[in-house]
Image (cartoon, rainbow, N blue to C red; front, top):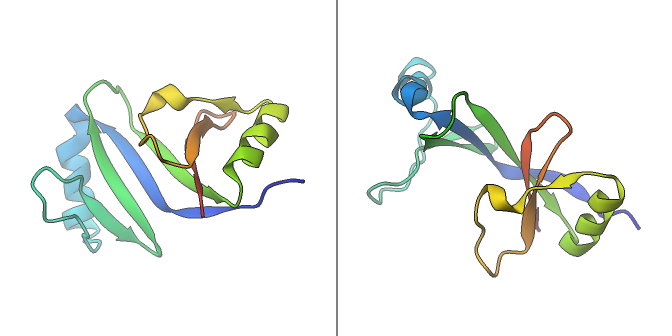
Length: 119
């Protein structure tokens, strides 16, 4: 049986350091999106993006920006098997997840990173 998939609530923009401040100013000042960043020092800036949350991550090792998307599934184990059979590449080393997290990372054929998480 094919697992169910729905869009998650989160999108992350991974931004190289040399473009980070200008990109942050674009969303904060030019577009004036509603900022929902946690008040804790060092928190990643977040913005309301319709009914989704857009995270802006500063990544020093990148040369260009990347978009990462969240997909929610009703059955992560079945989803892992389904993607394996479909030849979809897992990329769990891309960013550590908590040990108790029920999900994993995949990449689309066009190299867009997706976090698969459970409902």
